[in-house]
Image (tube, rainbow, N blue to C red; front, top):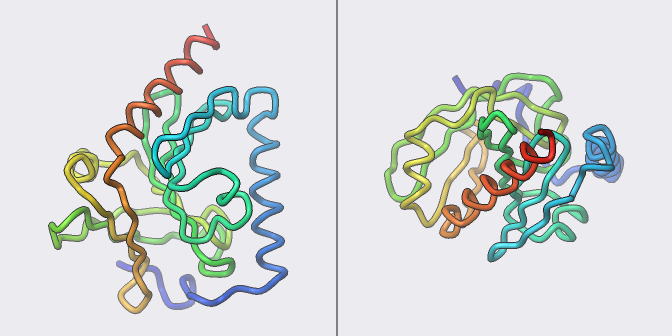
Length: 183
């Protein structure tokens, strides 16, 4: 089931919500450990892959753009365990923090949405609860785009994923570096 209208809404956001989002992102980076954050940082096309303390993050834009305004961002977060999760960043206030949201993901021209149970990390970001299923990863391998929706009456977001194979290769390399450093 899609997120309820009370838990998912789209707006242009407010200045205070944008400030809260930026503070959350900065605090999130501080929490994961500033000593390890960004030991690995590699661009691939319009994507950027960076290391955090216990995972690597690939965002679909240069970090300067992501840090300035993460709205409309697609990200993949791969843990050192190998688990790969999808994250999507929306307008501030688009979701209620800590609420369940069912992302509807369509890869390429398949026309079939795959339901991914997720949770709002804060008021503008959602992460899948479980690692991405094989059918999504396989669909991404041959897709030019991915379409993500949070509900039947909300606008969907379309992202260019033509370079996702190279992005996943860099994520693997980044995670390998983290594991090697830990051993």
